[in-house]
Length: 86
Ligand SMILES: [Zn+2]
Image 1 (tube, rainbow, N blue to C red):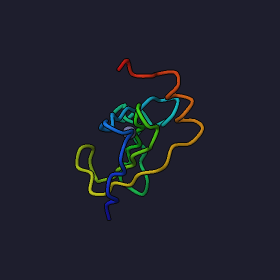
Image 2: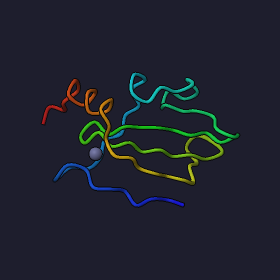
Image 3: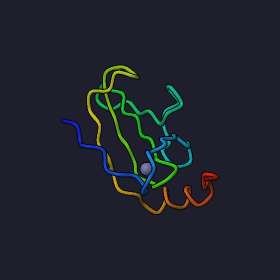
Image 4: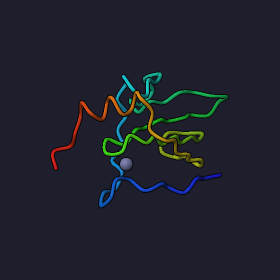
């Protein structure tokens, strides 16, 4: 199952990052990866709107599942520290 991508801020495309302070991770590929039941789950956060994208698959870069989550306090705090210059 794959969830359709929600819109970013008006006029922008999402810009996904994986800051360890927000998404954590096991350090597999530096993109917030966790291993869950033999699958690699990657968590990223958009620097513009603070939404999360969670994707998973058997190998990094071969995700067959994508889900999105609304911004939370942690991602919004990170957003305020990293306002894109535009
Ligand atoms: Zn976004």
